Image: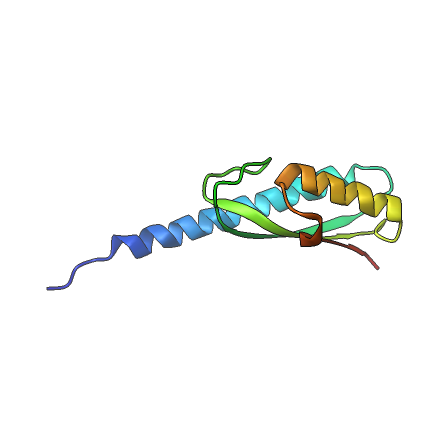
Length: 105
């Protein structure tokens, strides 16, 4: 007897809401960093995985940020790089080695 699998439907809608949350958070971080002196134009990519009891700025109850890639016009200035890294570490409780800041061309 065929039985519908409601779990797959819920996981699909959950996955799309997680993606939407992630994109919204990337946009917020881009706007925030873009307003910091010396950073200039910026693009952000966040890596996330299922939450494991870690709390920080981003606490959806489902995902946690595990890595951050930032591409910024001011990424060639060591002071700007340090400021970006410290901001990301404070907001997401991510270790420094999980944050990469690159200079935008």
